[in-house]
Length: 309
Image (cartoon, rainbow, N blue to C red):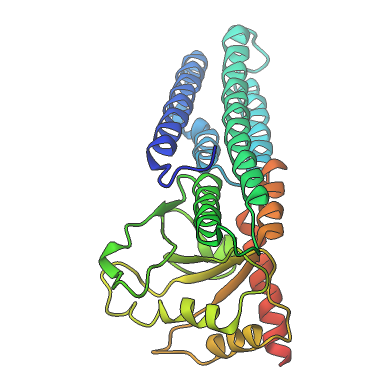
């Protein structure tokens, strides 16, 4: 089965379930801790729980899970140590305290469960991308559309709750049909995580190797109207193909020219990704990292080459 043209409903249901389950566990952990804290005779238990709550909130974002879970565990340990010092060695609520620790561990286990489901979905879509036929004339249009649908679905699931698919009909004029566009959801630090600040993404999919200068200019032309558009700010543009253009190709040279010659003081950056890059992003996700960091590496590598030239 191929990816759906619009997986928004399935993703929305998944994210809603994830957020509701984790929010419930977070509330439970807080309530149990407040019960423990009331035994100390002190005020403001929330002041002690706030670090735990912040770490739990960060983990709602689906990104850098391995690092953020480690921080949550450290915060839990520190909180328990601090609480025990308040009790001066009294063991009057050890069972409650153990229940609190268990609730935080349940929160972490649920994250692993949902992560596993998300990764399984992305892996299946990535397999579809690799299996999609390319570089052949027979059924070329159908294969290209299949590749496009699978790639966009891959992005949908990989960055769920962080990128939102946009309705592009308002900016389509018949001759220029964009493959995909995304709006950055509030809270996604694009500059910190991707190395380039943007509020929207244009994605153009090419089901063949080494896209040409004409493919690049097609994607670049989509950005020219952005200042006048109510739909897009000047976006990050991504050209996704079966094999990236080589560094000394006309496509790569014009990409540097586009970036270096700003329009209305706006930088127009085009990143090249191929199916191997998508695999690297999936690998980061499977290892508990942030797939956006692969984009950051691409931005850094492009910046070094640009400076040298």
